Image 1: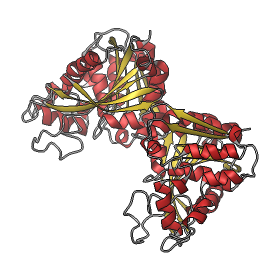
Image 2: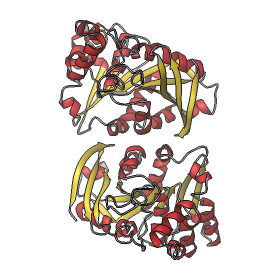
Image 3: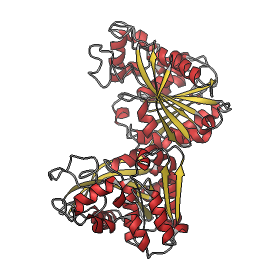
Image 4: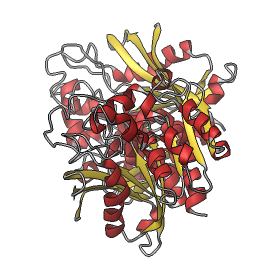
Amino acid sequence: MSVKTTATIASFGGKLLKLTHNSSTVGCEMAFNLYLPPQATTNKSHKVPLLIWLSGLTCTGDNCSEKGFFQHGASEKGIAVLYPDTSPRGLKIQGEDESYDFGSGAGFYIDATADPWSRNYKMYSYITQELPKVVFGEFSQIDSSKVSISGHSMGGHGALSLYLKNPGMYKSCSAFAPTANPLKCPWGEKAFKGYFGESDWQTKGAEYDSTELIKKWKGKDLDLLIDVGTGDNFYKQGQLLPENFAAAAKVAGLESGLTIRMQPDYDHSYFTMASFADDHIQHAAKHLLA
Amino acid sequence: MSVKTTATIASFGGKLLKLTHNSSTVGCEMAFNLYLPPQATTNKSHKVPLLIWLSGLTCTGDNCSEKGFFQHGASEKGIAVLYPDTSPRGLKIQGEDESYDFGSGAGFYIDATADPWSRNYKMYSYITQELPKVVFGEFSQIDSSKVSISGHSMGGHGALSLYLKNPGMYKSCSAFAPTANPLKCPWGEKAFKGYFGESDWQTKGAEYDSTELIKKWKGKDLDLLIDVGTGDNFYKQGQLLPENFAAAAKVAGLESGLTIRMQPDYDHSYFTMASFADDHIQHAAKHLLA
């Protein structure tokens, strides 16, 4: 459980920490970044809430901490931001590094059940259990009772999925360009077939598919914010399918808890996240600081 | 002079354009980025001022447009931002790509006089003459009479140097971690010896050295903003020397026109620029929108 600090970087009045630890859940050393806002670095007895940010395919915890502009709003509101990696790394599993959309950099925030992935590709348990425990154990200035979640693309799927599977675990959830119905898109089909096996992928996948999960939501006060750019090529290619998610929410009578903003001309890149990061921080702050 | 658009990216309500043109000054195709704030994209008859951003060693126009977050403040204030490259590229000059601090990515915003660099390494003329002409010719919504300049490290040297050499050309100037006295630091000595020759480097270099130039400043209303991080390793290694610049300003009776902020713990990275970008936009806006 011991955490090593590899860098401490001043950012918007607070500190961005680059950290590593040995994860028993995924069986390798994992890197992650943690932004502590000035409210948590100047007065260590002041507790701050936490926003977990899940990144998309090919990313690590670095991309969003460099290009997402979340520290700007997090510093103002006094919110810590946790940027985990997107998969285990360096396991020498055959095929691990062959695709941009499967294996390393593409953990999909599920617990794999098919060989050879089932031992290590357990990013669902890692993000919901082990990593928060490590972070709360190491950083007493973070309030473990106030956690929200957000993410982008594959990480948007992760944020929605983890939130909908665990009512009460997160105070709020938002997403950029989420893969909102992975059972019905090429990325999700490939990942679920690989991680769950050819025979089980649809039933196991349904346990993590936000469009399926929202139909069974039993939590309270749904208030999801989703931004999708109309210039996003992956949206145009049908990898995101926010319409399916919206339709499922409507059938479930939950449309009042869902705000999907179609942002004109915005693409799938971090330029989009930077442009609306303040809004997503504000969305989280509304619930975390209530 | 024709400009090609290679990408148009939505950013903070405006557009980040990735552009190329064939430069006669430096004799090759040059890439640059231009941010047009929403005020210039929604109403093309509305003129907006321009901030030129000069990047540091190893950078292109991309780094700051992705990680510097100048678009955040530029969008709010209605200022276009021009991100040029830092040198000519691909000229096949012997030694061009051998060093991170000389040749490609390290043009130092001077006009070289020594062979084999004197034909192409004319970034001073490129930035002060050709590139603005190209930009104003192509984008009529930019007000050519309202231009400010800023930059980082080698680009901070460039910003100060171009401003001090050309009273009245720029409405304001600011810098992050500028190489403020290149004649007295290893980066500057290497660059000036290479670009001006072993026998001339000190006299030619003095024509571009901000600490020399401020002693002879004849302009009006000096109001320079400089941020330097106390955790900046290049500052600690004596590559920046803001103290020399401050001392020269004092001798010239100009200390009231110079604000140097030593930012505790901040390093040489874009995390520092992102953290204070809004302040530098505000500094430019004060002069550009006056």
